[in-house]
Amino acid sequence: MQYDIIIGMEIHAQLKTKSKMFCSCANDGEDKKPNTTICEVCVGHPGTLPVINKQAVEWTILTGMAVNCEIADFTKFDRKNYFYPDLPKGYQISQYDLPISLNGYLEINGKKIKIIRIHLEEDTGKLLHPQNANYSLVDCNRAGTPLMELVTAPDITNAEDAKNFCQEYQKILRYLNVSDANMEKGQMRCEANISLQEKGRWKKSNGEIKPLGDYKLNPKIELKNINSFKAMERAVNYEIKRQTKVLNEGGRLIQETRGWNDSSGKTYHQREKESAHDYRYFPEPDLPPLILTELKEKARKKIPELPQAKAKRFITEYGFSKIDADFIVIDENLADYIEKVISEFSKKTQSEIWETHREKIIKLVSTWIINKLSGIIKAENSDISKIKITPENFAEFLALIFQNRINSSTGVKILDIMLKQGKDPSDILDSGDFEQIQDESALNKIIEKIISENPKIVKQYKNGKTSVIQFLIGQAMRETKGKADPAIVRKILIKFLTS
Ligand SMILES: [Zn+2]
Image (cartoon, rainbow, N blue to C red; front, side, top):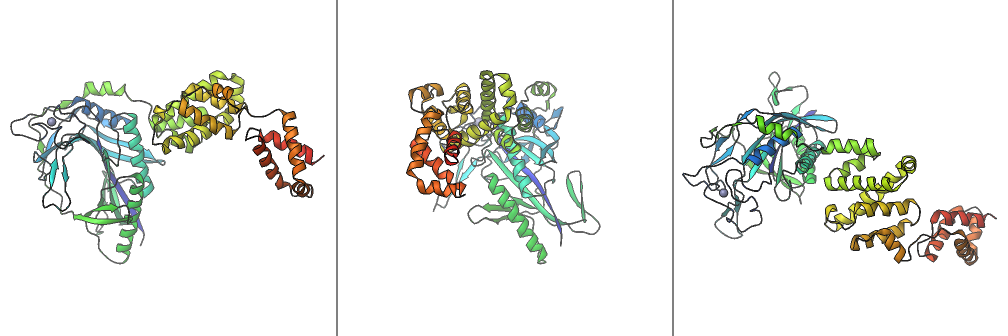
């Protein structure tokens, strides 16, 4: 049987406001002693009154705009009633029928994924289960943290798009500087709802899946506890395979929530979802409804260049490959750094050189910043904003390579010194024995010596095995401690070997 794969996402993101959603408690209780960043309001003592955090509302508007949503003119908060030990009030303040942002989309791999809504609510506390204890503990530091929930239409059809959607959304949250969106820390929690339906026997209407004729829809399975993008892709792929197998073997799927075990690479049953919960939503009587007209105007002016637009510009304006551009824009600081290096480089170079050699220069940027520097920064668990090399010095370093004054093995050594000491590359070059040997008469002597020392190799070359020249080049590089210009060495060698 052929099945259509239908996936919708729900993503919760903690906002990094200074204070909590409805009280003035500090919103940084994550690593603090349990129950130290709490007050009567966020643990719901009777008689206390919540106050709306304006910043959180502004950021939900901003995020909505960044993902092409309409922003409501009028919004309100509602009580979602349910009992759970990590919910001290016995209800969560959320938004039911009038979310702040609605009807947006994000383009992922050329497909528009519809965003139904983004609403604002408060996070719950945390339950801790000490080992071998017959009790649990509650930490309310997290209770009341502003939480933004995004819900997509079931428009995603494969695991890669599901993963990419989460990645793109994370980038946007970071560009807007509204959330650190770290999945491992639970600052961004992605859930995927997956169902498989027989081809041609269902339709989508208003973001919902409806059966055609007498077809009975297969239930959707909710995937939770996913703490990395890679895990998201693996978990969705596993679910697709598992559900296909059950259906093909004539089995029945149940509506359930499943977790993901990263080490076994499998999803597992967590709990059965009975018919939809009755949360007895009603408008929060302690909070006024909001008119957003003014905040909307303010937010519109604050939207920065977003990652997808930036990637496009890096391709058209500078000529980066799509792979490089996509990599660069993951980190806004890296993108800024690269733009500054390019600008410094072009300031140092005559405009004709820049125009004629642009491709080569961008290739150098890509080799030395995207590959080498980013690799070092990642290995050291550091950040581009913390490195000691100024964009001006990096541009100068690239210019030394561009002008063939140093070769790439010397480049690695100089880069290392720059990273450790933050020095000017020309000073490093002057103080050390680094400059590339391009002087042909000096190289002539060295090569003459190598040729006389390797008669067998020379004979092989003359007999037509020209690939042995690599060995001779290697000898010359060794002799000059890596400072010879390999292109010139090759030229001289050929001259000697063919004369
Ligand atoms: Zn509080």
